[in-house]
Length: 166
Image 1: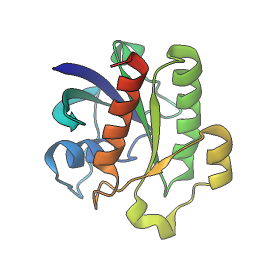
Image 2: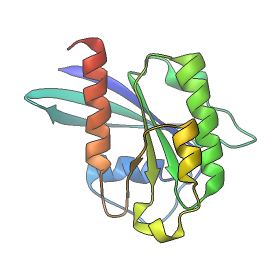
Image 3: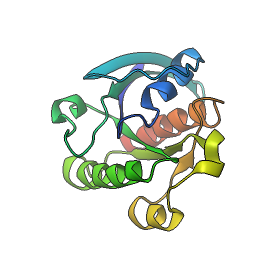
């Protein structure tokens, strides 16, 4: 069975841990718990008759005072960048991460960008034009309802398989 390391990155409190919990355990907890360092979870997924083990690295949030630790990214097969649709500042952090990861760190690595908290879409503060200009394709998810969560992880896994020729 193939194993893929997936790194979840984004600003603090965008819902990275909630997305992982929804995907791995099908649960959602309203209680916010800050990730310190990294938390690793795993799940086996069926991708068109092929089973893949995803090792998901839920990496602590970044902001103006903290940077992503490059050692956490070592050996990654793909990256998920998460934006909180209700907080514009998280889009700015995602733009920085996309530039750092996509251009400097791993130019060929598949990256999927998610706008989380689709269940609160009426409260979104992110600008679609800015997203299109600086991020490109994004997908709307909700860790609370589960909308598009499993699909997003499987999409990234399929992109990795296509890139590696398997």
